[in-house]
Length: 240
Length: 214
Image (cartoon, rainbow over all chains, first blue to last red; front, side, top):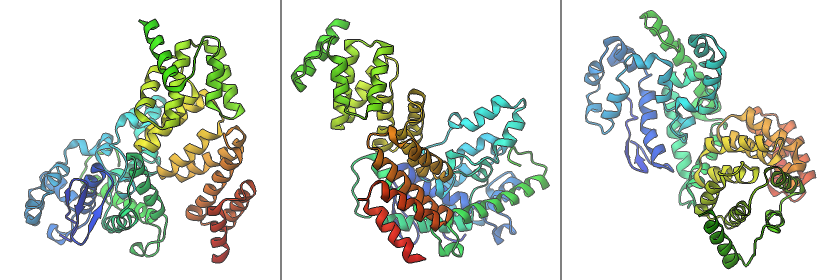
């Protein structure tokens, strides 16, 4: 498996190549989950060019994946992999989006709950059928996830987003190094401002595109691939 | 019980701030303490007329304003909670939204607080400006743009109208530059910002940089 297995120790963590800092325990923990989410959408020759996500859905078990990548079993993130790879029916229901991180663009967001989703609430009250509300909702950019629509949050990121995430981690570490913050608000708002600045600047990782554009493009592709895969396997999903 | 509580607040205000609050003067004292633009003073006058608050409300409001001035968070929260017994007022709701944003970094709660501010005082530039900022942090740039534009339109209702107008225009220019990549529009906003507030180093620098890029 190509890189990307991270370990965390509270408010800071160490990736394979460098040390980085994140402002809160929640965001430091999320760094690991974001990378796992990205890894699960990347095809591997060890899995016959399937993604771990596809392999687990097809086999209804993560055993094949863990056998293909025994290194994961000994990694500190093993339990996180186990949890994320328990792809039961819940994964295919609209509510599963609230268990996703939303990727690097949403690293500093608090845990998003359905009760915070006023768009969905409005659509449920307007539409006669729940399915119709969900169909409309999944395409609508949401302020809960930095303007990503729910379908792209559900789809997750991939290789480019993982690379961009590492780039942002380094960028942020440079920006906040030796900075002292007076309040939790200050410690959170400063990195968020750095994130919003970074996401709009052309980046060589994505051939000069702005990270936001590259992330959306990649997530669209992942969404298409996931949709096709689920349709092919006759798996019902609110997002497809 | 209520009487004892009132006596306690009055004693605290007398001892700590050397102010004697009475049924007759508390409304004027509050207006004096708030020291805000005429629009907000009118709002508070109106609030007091409509809701006929008590002397206890006057004490709590006085203590809230003092805690807010001193930026002492435990007291701000304490008096905010105690004031929740009375009809909501814009001053404390927006104060709490700012606390959520700048002290706790809780962007979603801050957003909700500023929206509540609109319910109490529609078309207020201070809320528009803060929502522009909140939506920038949320990464929803079209909404951020929309609220900064409204802040410019309604800038006269702000505490420092010219400064708020200039800062909103500057932020519009930043969105034009970074999101839309429309440097001509950005330039136009920056020039307007400098016309509203000539001593604005960030706007001067940005304008200089854009001119260099062209």
